[in-house]
Image 1 (cartoon, rainbow, N blue to C red):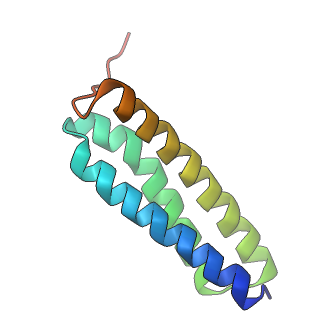
Image 2 (cartoon, rainbow, N blue to C red):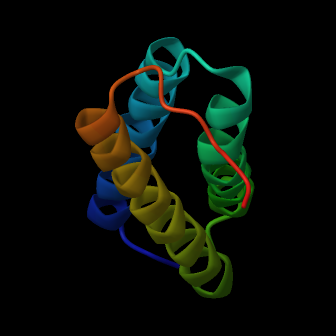
Length: 93
């Protein structure tokens, strides 16, 4: 079982991801772009929270991977919104 410090740090990361998702959800104007950029991080964050609800060594590893993936996805979305603005759109080609 992971120690309390690890679980507290993990919870801080979860809270930060929740806040960033909320911020981007309010910032990105286009619904399709919002869904595209936020659906996977939201799912990964939920997975991390579910695994963390029963923190064994195995589930914490899986939760950590899901949370790291969500962080990477949100970082990408944040950079694109900073570069192209809140009216960013997804186009197919």
